[in-house]
Length: 110
Image (cartoon, rainbow, N blue to C red; front, side, top):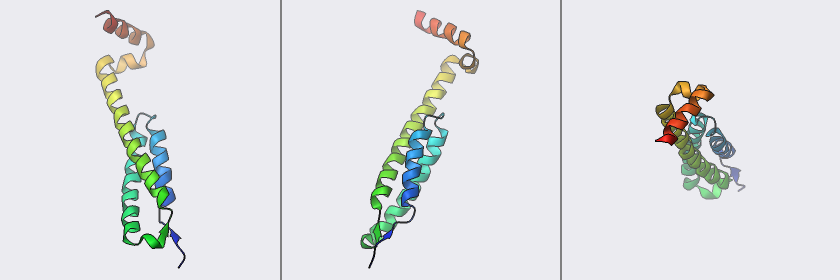
């Protein structure tokens, strides 16, 4: 019997890659893509474990799932960084370069 490609294997890989790239966009796209990659990867892994001799392409699922986890972690770190920056400097300082420089000088002067 010929092996068939595991369903959503390539999709999981693409979502994992997009989660790592998306973490640079304020973290939210990376978080969404990463969660989708982890969920779809979990379903594909469960399907593969039931009948491993029937499916090929499980490497894509494993790689996508790992990249999804990395993307989620990086995205969470980015979101936490932005929350910290807004709390530390304020939203107005992040939008105005001169005000940001003043706030940085205040912090460095202490």
